[in-house]
Image 1 (cartoon, rainbow, N blue to C red):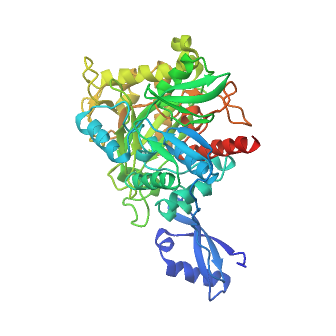
Image 2: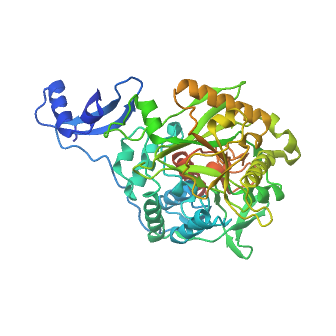
Image 3: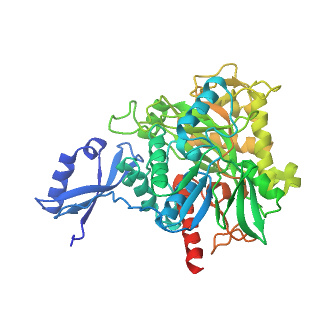
Length: 524
């Protein structure tokens, strides 16, 4: 039997953290052990002081060390039980994997295209500024997660097994470092292969995945799911539907509202993307003129309160780019991503402010969809401000402003270089939002400038709008059964339903819904 490991927690320099020889010598000096094996099980950066350190948690074994990564064996389905999963983003993918584990056939319905075909549509957005409403940065194989760079940090440890999600990602091709790093990250360049491997696992073990297949209706009898309609013509009979459609599938909210299925308004946030030279962020965070080669590009996390409302950074991307994430012509939406090496010259982050009921008063006639209407309105205003072609909704030029000018309500006479590939146009970004949101964003930036000296520089640019931080609509569900309180067999799931806030939490929620379906089937 494997003995319990010795645990050693140390704080070392970046150079020392990269040297197995140094760590081995340090272990020997602290434990007096001469023969042992070790592995780092936790790694984080502490940059609070001038000398930046790595905090390491090390397990030390006098016998052979176990592997950090342990593959989960899945076997082909042998039962005749099945469930339909709508959406193949993180929630849908991990719901399907869990259904396989429970010997239930997942039938996955994804409105977008497979990765190979999806890439062409992404290139078309960037190069030709044409948005395919069914295949874009949000819709398609892997969902928004595939091209949002794979940040895996989560506070959802009480919701489910984070380790299991990370292990499955490693099993399908992610680097084992995600099991160790305090803020794990896969990278947009590596995520597609992981997603394709998950797809292959599902299909090889008897699951189905149907791309370019859009949910157009839910078939309901006696308040129970009986099936789904796909592409307005194909019917799939089922008693269980996991609705994992993501935060940007507005047509699903409209469909549910039309069918008088209960929806609820949900808190969300809206704002802009801010971009700085990565070298500047390194200098601020690492207290240096040039970043140490053993340190990764620096990130930041900022939060403040302005007039009793939160203003905070969102999805910060070191060495990243700002991406065009509209899901329909005639709107501008931004997000950010980084490659695995995070080696682009810019750092960007969403800076957003919480939306409150007072902001939604002009849209209150839309009930639970009021927040969605605010989103739509701001995104369309951004499209016009970007000097795109209003006559045919053509273009993806984003309105932009120097950060200093945004704070001072001044239109920028010129703009610095920016990573947003479709292009930016100088505009009055401060006029895109309701006044109470703009004023809080402006004060939030001032506060952040006080926290990070050098943050408020003329070469920092803001690009509008960061509007899809989370869903503005919640699809209610019972806490015990995870089913919609009015529709038996309908399992609202993930970010789109209001129960997750990132890749890992969405994956965990997908697993939970799949497990609940298994429980219901077992009871029957």
